[in-house]
Length: 131
Image (cartoon, rainbow, N blue to C red):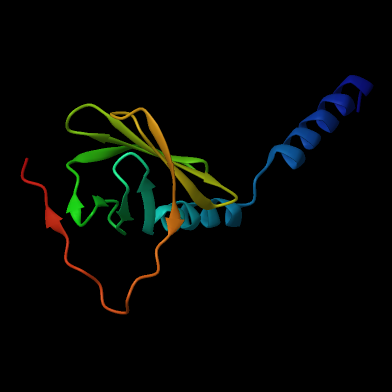
């Protein structure tokens, strides 16, 4: 084999070996993404002195204070979930180390730190927002 072909073969092998992601990591990523954001968190609005509850359901409904927000998920990865409501405003949930840490509300242009909510054993009913 010619020296040039050996170098090409070597570079192809390196490229394949070092840039290849195992199939299992793809499957783990698919499992981690949904479960990362599903849950219930509390956040406080210092202006109104109220504590609110944010819930992301397994079907990716966004619920605040037991009211389902109309809209859709625009983007999701391990760092953020972006939700677009029917008014054109975004809600962004930021995550660090696979843990949601804050909620950015574009309508208010404010960031709220979020904490996981401790819920009673039974779940509550979700009301649909009719506005």
